[in-house]
Length: 235
Image (cartoon, rainbow, N blue to C red):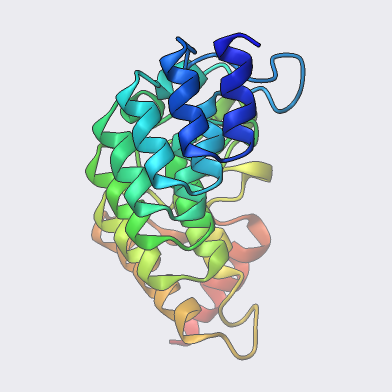
C-alpha cells in the first residue's frame, strides 16, 4: 500500500496516528481520495467533515490546501461554515481558506450562505470579517444571496448583521424573488399573526429602502405591490 492509499484508509478511520504515519511515508494531503465518485474530496475535507480539529491542524501543517478542493462540489471551508465549526474555520482562514471564500458549491452557496442558512451567526461573522462578499449570488444560475437565506430563516439578528455588512435586499434570486419580497410575505396583510422576528426583519428592510430614497413597491411583484400600496394608504 503506497502512502496515498494509506492516507485514505487512515482518514476514513479518523485515526490521527495513522494519518501521521501516512504523511511520514510521503502521502500527498491534497490528493483526491475518491476521484471517480461523488466522494471526490481531499483528506482535509473529510477531517473537517468529522469535526476533528487536531487532524485538520495536522494536515494543514503538512501542506493541505483548501485551494486544492476548488474543483470538488464543495470545499472544506463550506463544510466548516455549514457545521459552525469555529475553531476549524479559524484554522482554514489562517491557512489558504480565503481561496474559497466566495466560491460556490454544487448548490450555488458560498461558505457565508452555508453559515447563514444553518443559523451559525459567529461563523457568518468570521467569514464577513475575512472578506466574504455579502451580496455574492450565482447570477447565471439565478442563485440567492446570504440575506435571502437569513430572511427565510426568520432570523432578525442575522438579517441585521448582513445589512450592517452591506447586504442589498433588492437583489432578485430564484423566480425573481428578492429578500425584500420574501420578508413582505411574512407580515400583514399576508399573514394574520407574524412573529416578532418577521416584523423586525420587514421594518429593517423597509427602512433600508427609505434611507436610500427607494420606493419599496418598485421591488415587489405586482400582486404584492398592490397590497403594499393599499396598506400604506391606511396608515
